[in-house]
Image (cartoon, rainbow, N blue to C red; front, side, top):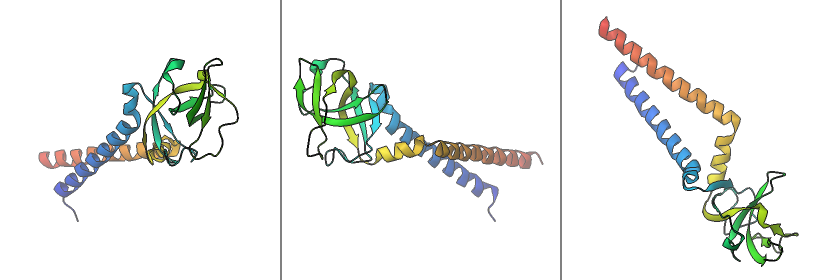
Length: 170
């Protein structure tokens, strides 16, 4: 059976690992927002091999139509449906302020032009597999499990503290 000192060391180590992993995950997923970027998980393989399915892309917003050029990889969001997609601009129609877009893995351009008003911004960075991780941690059940783990760790820490304190005064 473990003594109090061993349990305390294991508790401290476990707590430290959980906190470290949490900080890293939150940092990777949400830190780009501090730089004014938005993050999106890539759910299809339409941009492969440039951007793999399951990647997380970081998008720098561009407010001017002139900021976009042919070959830019851009994320677009339809405000009505809330759905986003990330494709490459292959042609620009300055008169109608729209783009012809195409996924790198697709043989043909997208069927209809994509209007500038739907553009979120240019993809500045893509991190493979991180979209899967972000999706996992956005799941409500996972959030509840993580909260339960944190509560359990806090309860263990309190129990260890009270046990140690009781031993001191006995």
